[in-house]
Length: 597
Figure 1: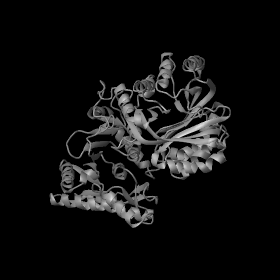
Figure 2: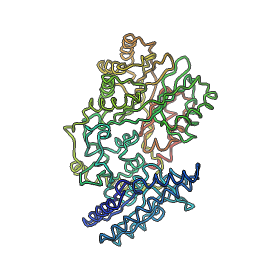
Figure 3: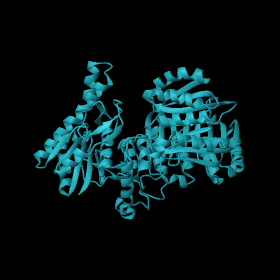
Figure 4: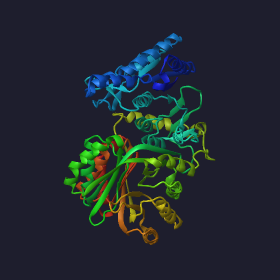
């Protein structure tokens, strides 16, 4: 018999009628010949009520006791769902996280799954039961109740699907699938039938609320198909799998992260180890850093810009107060009224005009770009918060995301084409998994024969980036990394991009024309550089990856010229003369994570 894991979020079990509806879905799946495991969240606003009670009792409740408290919400839900199934004439057993054998570490409120013991679930399924498992929670080695943090029930569901070898993991929610952007922001957003793990990982990290990135990490790692469906209709929904919907569409989705803050450390000495000092101090405070831009140094100094969540800004600034004198930097500036607008697509690496199309759309909408970072499948821009909604609409329209691509494939077509390959790969992955949420690196690679061009004193106004990269594209120059950050002088910005080294002379010539046209301060170029890339699953949720990268390079006396980050990659541009040594050093430092692939 096939096995299906069904996850029902808080809105899907918010009241008695919705609980009965969820129970009927599970029973119907069982009657169709499937073994069924349900993963259930706390009812509606139940967790908010518990958090309010905690705040009324204590201004600083212990983390252990908070997990003990909030985990009761799921316990209520699973018991009621099991009762509803029983009342409808089927068999069900409810289980807490501990009872399903969900072992985690002891990081209260943000625990990571270490292992899941499936014997009890398997036995109950064999006896004809629908197993109703509490999401969001587990137990540590001392039998303390732990919770998994934001999106924890999604993570529970996909983790169970992976270790049980489920045929599918159905995520029931209050939307009927994954859209090209948030339909609450843009009514013209289109529901996609298929989206790849990589694309969904990036969109989830950018704030797409349908799925949490940790659950997508699990699905990608163990090749678990995820079916996002509506709790309130029988709409087909969206499949999240290894394949993408279209082989030609450069962009599959756009996202806006509203509450960002930009921090810039000005005048950082351009010598090895300084990035490590800055980011290790921030990581020690458990602050998640998002967009990271380190531009090419000028007069022995460089500027490092990055974004954090707005609620983390004050802690970040306080941390930097102690770091700046040690690093020898000049000052720190920040802006707490910015948002991030991004486009994502696995095909963009094969197409040359994606960045210029995005920048032109923003320019035509009168939107100013404050920062740019790129990866193989994502372009992110930082824009004024007041312009964020207009920016999202502009890029969504520019890439015709409201229209279905001509070559779009359905899940049925993809499944018939793939055969049994994915099932074999998935089984191998499961057999190798010893620490379920351990960092999994898919490779450490080196791209040599690179060069870079940097334009300083770029006017900080709409349209400049669009004109630059349209001109570069028209000149037939293929650009890899693009980073834009503040350069600390007159409020202007600096833009760097990398190219193949055989294009350096032509690129400098084009860059000089751009520099003259827009009255920029100067242009710099460099050759004999290489891009070192750390790729993997969980790079954002495992915040130590960047720190390890910076430390290994610093230990080798290697200076970082440029940095670019994404959900799936961390890229650093360094001098070629030490690139091979750096690659070998990083492979040793990450040996355990590479070994699990």
